Image 1 (tube, rainbow, N blue to C red):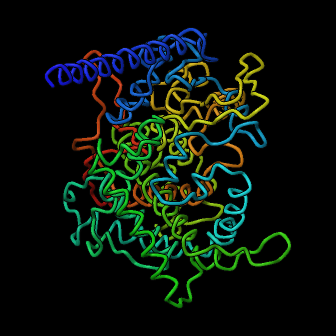
Image 2 (image 1 turned 30 degrees about the horizontal axis):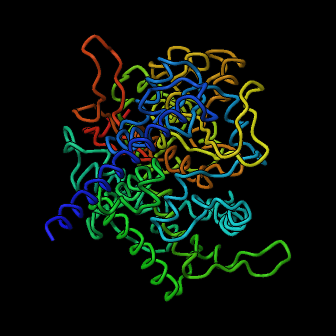
Length: 517
C-alpha cells in the first residue's frame, strides 16, 4: 500500500512536471514564432509588444496607449508592430488604403469586444459589411442637413441652459462666475442634447435631474471594450469580469440603461422628430420598411448615447482649454464672432456662421491636437491581402491601423505639431497646399464608409456653443486638465486618457459677462 501511495505521488509529480515542461515548450515556441516566423516579424516594435498581447492590455488599462504608440513611432519610425498581430502605420496614405471604401479589410478584435460587451453589434461595432450598410441606411435620414436643421431649436435650448445654469449658476457672473469644470458641464450639455435628439427626452443633467454618474458609465463601457479588445485571451476567455470587475459591471449597466431608453421611447407618442422618429420610418432600397428589432434598437441606442455625448464633450472641454491657454488666439476668435453677429441670438446655422473661418479653424485644430478617439482602430486583413502605400503588403489575418494621435502630431503633415495653431487650417495664412496636406492626415472622425455618422451634429454643437460663449463672456483658465510634461517643456496640452474614447478632467474656467461696447 505504501508503495502504491509513493507511486501515485511520483505519477502526480511527473504529470505536474510534464505539464510545466509542456507549457514552457509551448510558450517558448510561441515566442520564437512571433519573433522570427510570424508574418509581421520583420516590423520593428517593443519586445513585449511583439511577443504578448498583455503589453497592449497593460497600456489600455493605464489609459496611455495613444501616448505610448506616439512615442513608439518616434523611436521606430512610420510603421510599428505594437502587438503580436497588429501594426500601426503613421502616414496619410494609410488612411485611404486601410479605411477607404471597399478596402480588403474588416473591423478587427476591438470591435468584436465592443459587440460582445454591448450584447449585439451596432453601427459602430458591426464587422459584417452588409449589416453595417443596413444599419447605416436606417440611421442616415436622422443625420441629413434637413433633419439636423429641424432639430436646431432643441440644440439651442440646451446651449442656453448650459450658460444659464452651468456658467452663470443662476447669478450674473459679476465680477466673475463660479469656477466651472468644463469636462463635467460639457458632459451635462451634450448628454441633454443627445437625450432630446435621440429619444425626445429631457434628461436635464444640466439641472441635476438625471444621475450625473452616467458619463462615468460611458467611460467604463468604452474602457472595457478597449481592454478586452487588446487581447484575444481576455476577450475569448471572458476575463474582463475577473480582471476589472467594476469596469465590467458599469458597462453592463450602460447596456441596460440604453435598453430602458428604447423601451420608454416606444411607449410614448411625441410630436418631435427625434432620431427614433426617422429610424422607425426608414426604408430599404426597394421601399419596404427597414425595421430593427427592439434588441437591435437597444444596440444602436448604446452607439447613439456614446457617440452623441461623450466625444463632443471632450472637444468642448479641450477647446476651452486651448483658448484660455492661448490668449492671442482667443482675442482673434472674439473679434471674429463679435464683429460678425449683431446679437447672440443670431449665432445659429446659416451664412454668417459659415463665414466664421477662425471659429472653424479653432475647432479643427483642437480635433487635431486632442482627438476624441486618440488611439488605434484596427482592421483585419481579408483573404487576398492588403497593400498600403504601395510599399507594405499584409497577408490575411493580421491587423493594421493608423494611430490617430501620432499621425495628428506628425511634423510631415503638421509643422510645429506641438503648437496649437488654428492658422494652419486657413489657406491665406499658410498656403493652399499646406492646408490640403494637413487635411490628408486629418482623421478625427475616421474615414470612408465607417466614418462617424454624427460628424455634422458634432460640428454644429461645437461651433454654436463656442461662438456663443466667446460672444457673451470673457474667460480665463483657473486650473486642471493639463498634461504632465517635463519641466523644460513649454507645451500646454489638454490631458486625456485613452479609454477608446478620451477620458478627461478639467479644465476649470471662470467667466465674466463681457462689458457692453
